[in-house]
Length: 361
View 1 (cartoon, rainbow, N blue to C red):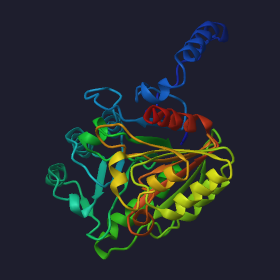
View 2 (tube, rainbow, N blue to C red):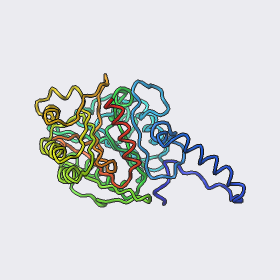
View 3 (tube, rainbow, N blue to C red):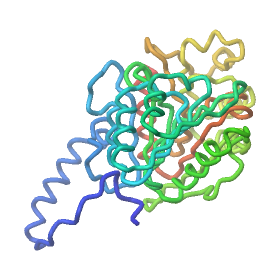
View 4 (cartoon, one colour):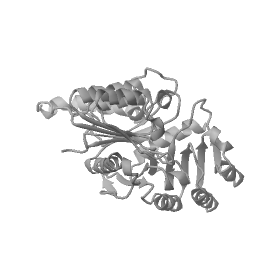
């Protein structure tokens, strides 16, 4: 299986002579350059074969009905499933996504869902259960099953900050990365199985990662971490302390003082540190915003009337940290979370930096 193809495979075209292909190839190449790589993240149709192992998506605030919304992209991804969909979702109240899961179940795809205990009463969860889709919850009111990931056909991993709600797709700032990698999918499938099968006995997640480092065919390196049982803060601190030029972050919640101190230390050593905080989180007495502002770091509050829900750090314009993981002690020690550290791909980093600049204006 080629793990570098897109979410939809296409059959190979009949062989044609090189001379017939030359002019169309140049036209395609020149057109691609003219359009710019940004289209890949914001306007690329999910069904198109990109020939790459990953795609990055961001929510389109106030763009209900957009064919490029996170909701529509997820519906299309689920619609392409042929064998299995495992979904670990903190929240699911988006009817179109529930419809896609139900449709997959009806066409013979094995669909399983685990959600946060507090959200089991959501009407869309009830619809899944009514149709016979197995749904479990974490059975723990003291912590959160905070994941927002889906594994499709044991090959594609969808993860990021996007809760599967109308607001998550159309009012809040969110990000998703879709990665085509069998080893990475195995990591997330094992996490799902542990959560789903062991929910009743309350075992914490993150105990084992089969492939802690995954290298895609384009050289991108992806390191996978799960909390609360796995160590998430050490690799985070290592990346912050390794920064030589710049750190950019977008944080819905940033209350982890050790991580905040590491960023302030980096700034004091000459590293540019810039951040966007969710405005409503600054009332939290543990939020790092005021301490960073007082230390001279370039941090701002978001201006979105909804929620700036990202949990992203970009180091030296080449390393991206993303997932469901807020920068807090709860994320580290109590909640079930996922954290990806993506290295060696400046194109992915550029996509997240473009989102940062849009929000920091």
